[in-house]
Length: 104
Image (tube, rainbow, N blue to C red):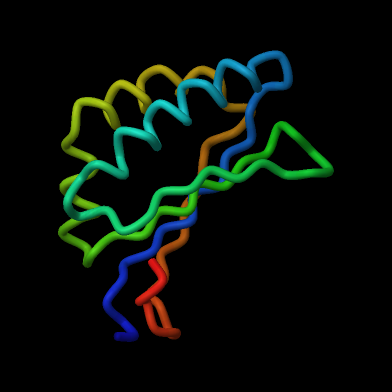
């Protein structure tokens, strides 16, 4: 059903010498995040033209799922671990799904 997902796109620009370290920490966070009951999907994508830029595509079963995610130990560890790796502060935009979410 449309409008059932709370989707967050997090844009991250990483310092060039820390790309691999950031990727490893982020993949660990993503693999733990998909185990949360409020998470429908948690993907990490990397820019083909600029490998220092990533987007985290986070889909939650409502805003409560997003709020619960920020309370987990793995999120807090990720947040603290990668904070100094950023070339600039990360940004996020929130969306809801317009298409059906049956494939998520």
